[in-house]
Amino acid sequence: MLASVHRNLCRTALRVFGAMLVLFTCFMTPASSSSDKLDFPLAHAETESNTPTLTTAIATWDNVELHDFVQHERPAIKRVLLPMLKALPSSGGHFSHTTVFYVLHRVLLKRHGWFLKGLEPQGKAWNSTSLEHVVILAKLPTDLQKLLQQQLHSPGLRANDIMTLVLITEHLVHQRTLGQLPTIYKTMGLNVSGSSPLGLVTDAVDTLFACFIAGFDSAKLNRVQLYTLRTRVHKVYPNWPHLRAFIHETMKYSLQSGSVAFTDAKRAVQEVAQRFGQWQDSECQDMKGALMKLEDRGTGRVRLADFYAKNIYGGKWQFRESIQYLRELGALDESNPNNPRVVIPNYVTGISNCIASSEYSAVCCLSECELIRERVEGILQSPEAEPGMITAIVATLPSASILANRTLSPVMLHRLNGIAMNHGGKVPLYGRLFAQWLHHAYPRECPFPHVSGSTAPKLQRDFEHAKKSAKASLEVMRAHARRSAPNGTAQAESSSPVENVAWTYEEELFVPPPMIAEQPTGFMEIHFAVIATFASIVAFGRALLRAGRAARQQVSMPCKTESKTVANAFSTQLV
Image (cartoon, rainbow, N blue to C red):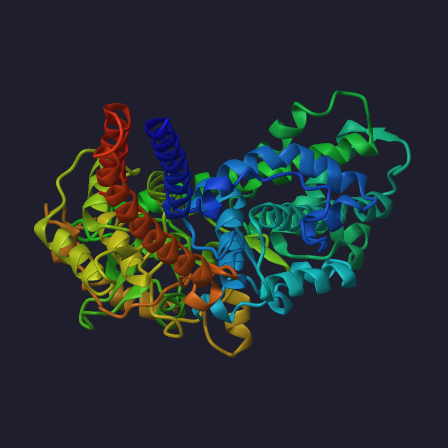
């Protein structure tokens, strides 16, 4: 009888102890980060705290075109956003306003080559960007602007709200393009409510994109002026014949011969606008190819002498920017004052090569470095990583001009390790030094990151409004071109770009990591609870082991066997 009581008591104590071990394991299991739960829900209901969000507010909008656009574009935007947001730092699943604007800029640049006025920091730090500066978002209803402002500052936007913001922004920019079509129709005498001949509709669409390229407001032009613009736009944009061919080819899949309804014409324009950035990038690739033929010894740079010589003798109408303008763009490397060089990725993706500029946005070259960053983010899924992990990825990651499975130089490895040493052993992926390291790893695709405030990129017309010349005079270009290589091409010496490009040591974090104060409420209390629970379990375990030894002297062996088994399990859990 006494042995049975002791045996039952022992088994009961073992069950309690096992339950406490499970509780301890739950406490000690790391909480999954917000990035692990990024599912981008449609979120037609409000959040747990019944606080309205950007996503729930948009769901109540009575805007059929917006909702159709969201349904159509959401999957593609999710594919771009997901790896980025899984890697970026957040606090409890909320992303700071600096991170939100950084993400918005990168997504729009990757998908369309768009620079939004007020979103791009123009050489300043990313935390200097605010909602009030983004011109296109001023088109949002006032109550929605207030809600977005509140969310951005506290507690920040969740993943699905960032997706909603991207969708809204894209829709607003597209509407700016589509919004001119009714005006052009009316000015040209076409039927907005019915159908019009295909030839006249094609002329109207050509006129719309001529206004788009030249930056004109169609509402301020009469019929004769619209015709003049459409027939002479090639003088300000020499690539117009190719663009016109692209427009007609795209429209051919959307419009049938004969009469065309206005709604069908709008859909055709939207399709052209959606694909415009990708088409325009072919021109950017031609420009990059021309510069690579002039490249100075594998550095991702072109001597200014060769740059100007290509304009004068090689027929490249683009290569005419003045030294002062190139400097403010951040596209001029003057580390050797006697041999200034144009930085290929900074020049190609620079705002000087943007077209279709308006008060809201401009269409620029797509960033090839985005593809590289996307791959790195998708693999690491963290805002920082150890140098060895980064080098393992980059060594196998090709680009348009770099082969896969290469061996990184000792200098490159040393510099990456140096970045990690300044950040506790890990490299911040969203820091200036890592961006500089990527530029050295991919000198023709990734731009050189300047310290904030050291450049001030502007559109050529904005630069000239300050009574500065964005274009070099023929005399200046000829003076530099005299020092060009005799055959008009750079010398193709085999040399690593790392040994030919200066390295600077200023660090800046584009997206700062969350501060301790930004941790979720109760974070420290949970850790204290874990410590207290751990101490209680250890104390209880010791008492239980002592009780087990005493019980073994009075009861039969079964309890002894069970006690030994659980004691081993206890030791294993603590290890």
